[in-house]
Length: 325
Image (cartoon, rainbow, N blue to C red; front, side, top):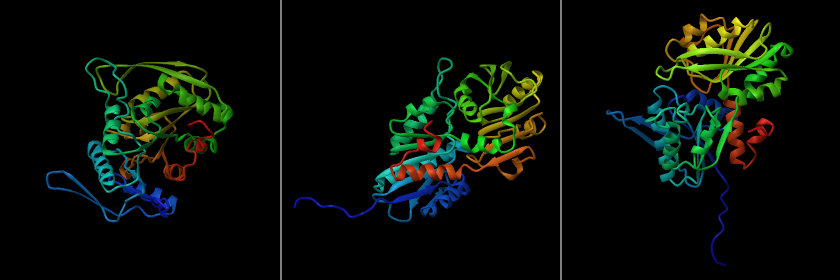
């Protein structure tokens, strides 16, 4: 007989970075496991050191890191974690990014600009990642930036399920805050069985987070409007979009977004807006000082845990979304 047959079975190992250890612990708890032991620390000059405290040889490794502030530090830490796994002979490495950093920079709007989302994907591939998992990418085309399988997860079942339980859907209109969100909002209308409206907005190309004009297309008068977006950053755009809906006769406006970046003045803007409720998931940490009465934070951990289990068992991630992934 030539060769040997190994009796080893597949082994899943799950690791979390330092950006958001609470989410990593919650995901691990949903899977019924403990995060893998690792030592992560900074040298005096800011360099990051990673060492895994037990063998990872031949394992199916999943490395979770939320790209929260300071975003560049946590992306670099995740890259180093992947490199350490590759050099320790992990069999397959899946990068789990609930919020994918630099996703808004997915194309060149004008000359002499970068496509930073592609750069981040290339960095993970170079570090040794075999697979990428993310929740509600800013645009679906980012999946093509990574030369390998990408599991694009949707928070729609979590957000829509919550709102279905508290709203009369016969009086609901789903609103896309811009043309780029129309496809996502169509999935919402398919689930809720309600009409779609679109806000056409024109941005000022010279000022970040600044929108100049809003125009509403669709039936919103006398209805509850659900503004659906992938992220809330400073909150100014979404608040102005809500004002545009109220100007067209909307009865109530609820915002549903996957990623609560909540930078700068976002909390004050949203608190003082006419928006009834802001519903987000915990793909990014929301510190206690950023929480307010109108804010509802839903857990993304069960979805991430199910997706990781499907990938590990060679199952279907698409089955988590009724075949619409």
